[in-house]
Image 1 (tube, rainbow, N blue to C red):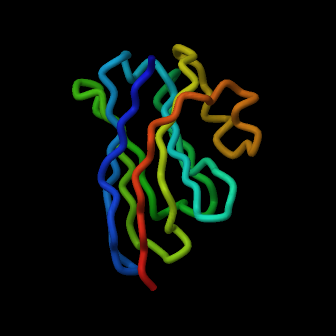
Image 2: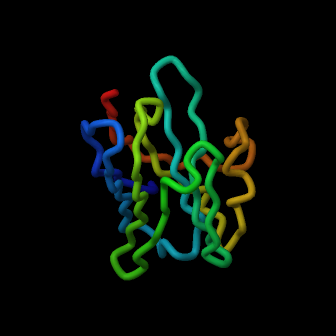
Length: 133
């Protein structure tokens, strides 16, 4: 059973910052692509960012480019999502996820709405981010 645990969510004012963490103790985190997804109330879950398990490259969806930064601490088995200049529309539950495909460049699927078709099926339970306007 793959376990991904998110933390760091909370209530913040518009323009503020938060850093989310995704931790696992089950696998070598730098071997696998780790994604951040989010789901706002009444909306579909969407990919936000990822860090590749093949070359550590990163990707961001357009709505967060320049504001969010993904990074990884291999020794601690943690992936971070630093979020700055937060907007009300960033309000959502944020999930980290993986496809458990070793050393694959799965980041190319971060924007795919049918992400489960690409094996991205291992999700944590999420952490809530609320941005007040």
